[in-house]
Image (tube, helix red, strand yellow):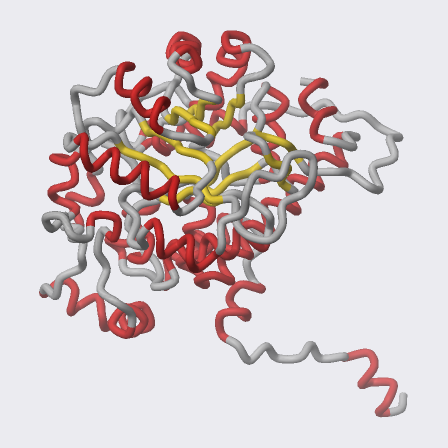
Length: 405
């Protein structure tokens, strides 16, 4: 055999010189991104993302609730041009998916909220900024250019920005945050109603998690084990709660004192009268509360148990989709989060009656694994899995998935 023929048989794959791209190329599902992020990130930071409340029973049950379902596919259907796009809350997205709000995001990677929002923009997906973000409302809007609603056509020319609000004890601060989001052209207000008292996150307590990070004996020991993480952090701006700039200093230990444990449905009605855009209530877990949210003026509900981070032993949101849909009817937007780790989970949610899903941990694992490129990878993975699931089911459009149940 000639040398040229041997070379053709061997065909060595070019070596990827960029370390981030090399890492991400070896990640084929969200579990791979999780494992990579865990390897690169200090334990307290990883556990903040990965952990749940108390015994973490809800955390485990959330994912299991999606995995319990089994598909019955149709065969011999032309799915060569399966369309994964979906309309919800006044826009059409290429995928029935939004990026959920996450707090302290720059702690996972200096790119933080801006990196995640830019990745969302490239995929045409909404990004939700948290009240407890490490990037201010206005700074994120300036970095990614919010876009207006675009009914009937795929998004483009900016990012579909949503703002998540915790109802705080300081009523004036609530109004200020809502008005700032409206002025910055955020299109949807997501009001979280399951966090009026902070859940007990055992891993965070055991790890002694402190935000902003402080130099301690444990931190110094961690620097030796995760040097890349700490080099990035030391080169970036200090981490803080950016939406509270100008107010008294806020730390993770003091966040519980910010939340208002006396909130009622009257507070939702007040917000509805103040907010000019779409309104979502995040946290209902049953038909009665979902219907009450609609009566209070909400355009939709986000079924959520905070990813298992608040009250442990709660019903998994996936199990509430069908009864909530029956209670609120076909015209109210129903989004579900908590436990989504695979594109097939999105298919399950839609078949049960949801309009779309939201993910938090899934893209944070990507952020820890590779910054903005890692979030891109997470969204690529979910999009590919969802489309493949639709095709293997013999479903050509999201509407068919919903109608088939």
